Every structure is written in C-alpha cells, then in structure tokens.
Length: 348
Image (cartoon, rainbow, N blue to C red; front, side, top):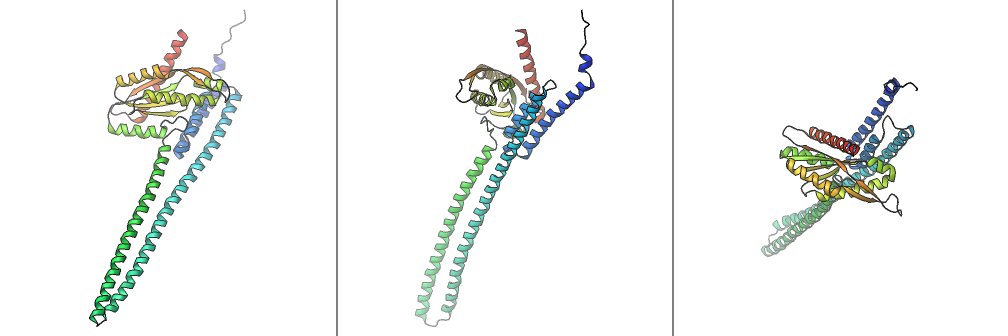
C-alpha cells in the first residue's frame, strides 16, 4: 500500500499563498475599478460595474490561467466600452448645456432688440414733445398733443404685446428644455439592461428612507448558479434571464417598493414595514418569481429552459443603523441563505 501523502504542506506553501494573495488583489482591483468608475460617471458605469462584479466572482485561486487571461481581456473590453459610453454621455451633456446657453443668449438678444426699438420710438416722441412745447398756436399744440398721446399709447401697447410674446416663447422653450432634463435625469436612475432602478437611484431612495426614520426593510436577492448559466448558454442568455427575472420581481412587489439592480445578478428591494411585511414579500418571490425561464442562447436557435432560484437576505432598519450597516446585514443574511440552500441540496 503506497504511503498517504498529505496535501496540507502544498496548500500552505509560499507559492500557494502567493497565488491566493494575487487572486485576492485582482478581485479587489476589479471591485475598486467598478466603484471608481461609477463615482466618476454613474450614468455610464452600470454595465461596467455588473460585468466587473461577475468577473470578480468568476475567478479564484483554483482558476486556470486561460480563465484569468479571459477575465482580463473581458475587463479590458468593458473598460474600453465604458470609456466610449462616458465620452458620448459627456458630449451629450455638453451639447445640452450649449443649447441652454444659446437659448438664454437668443432670448437676451431678442429682449435687447425689442428694448432698443422701443427706446428709439420713445426718444423720437420725446423730441417731438419738446418741439410741441415751443408751439404758440393753441390749435396746433392740441392736435400735436393728441397725436403724440395716441403714438405713446400705440408704443406702450406694442411693448406690452412684445413682452407677452417674449414671455410665452421663453416659457415654451424653458418647458421643452425642462422636459429634456427630466428625461435625462430619469434615464440616469434606470438600469439600462433590466429597466429597474440602478445603484444610484437605490442609494438616493435609501438615504431618503433613513431621513424619514420610518420602519422599512432591505431584501438582497442574489440569483443561484448564474455564472453557470452564463458559462453554459452564453452572456446573451444571461442578459435575457436578468431582464425576465427583473420583470417578474417588479410585478410581485408593491407600487411603493423600490426594486433595483444592485449589480451583476444581485437585486435590492426596499419595502416599508417590519418583519411580517418583509417575510410576506419573500414568500411571494419564492412562489411567483422562482421557476423555469425560457432562454434563447442565439437568435434562431430553439429556446432552453433553466430553473431559477435565488438567495434572499433580509435586514430590518433600526434607529441608529446607517446605509452601509443595513446593507452589510442584508448581505450577510443572503450568504447565510445561500449556505443553507447548499446544505439542503447536499442532504437531498
């Protein structure tokens, strides 16, 4: 019988520790890159953050070199794409600001031209009134005054009409621009892939709930086996699943709930109430959102069905808890739910 060889010395070797440290550093670098780019331009960083989050989860000290290289190449492509999206977004914002400045300039120019025209008319009337004051013929003086009063009246009426016309035009232009700003602001808070609230919108709503100080809960929903679905069926199918799951998730929540994509395959729900309301929402998700989803890996190919479940972590807000502490509690509860699901699957 051959001697039993312990693997512990190899696992604890400096080389193994170095690999683990490098992988951990690489994962932290991916997370820091996603966070930094989101802080630079949140509007264009949603897809980048989701992809980097998935890449962070996809590598470990047990990954093959080709997998690490593939992750690095994917990260480079996503960073290049993010750069293009950010440049497009900034160009769009610059164009919008230019439009607003041109609007103000045209309005100011219009008002100045109108005022100059009326000023010339009034200066002419002033000169004529001075001439009238020197008249000694009472009849001519009277007729000249009547004519001047009529001209003053017409000028004042025209000034009033011009002012009203300018006001209406300015209000219409400002209304159009306000509508454009509202659409832009709305798009800045929406996740491009799923149509749910994005991370920026969630953080804004979370801060508002903390200020109000009314009871609410955070539910962190993380898909089980999403990496395997991506690896087996491709990222197009993974994107389809995220969109379908997001739609189902939105339908089982109340109108007052905020449902958003937190990043990658994680979703976050903020719902009013205490433990009972949160538990009821979790039950609805397990009953109506979990299940079989049809996916098309490639256009023209037959659909495949995948069974989807998720780990759900619930954290109740308590006075004194800040946003980071609440989300950390939800994250911990979610990982406990994942571990419990794995134990149940092994026992089965």
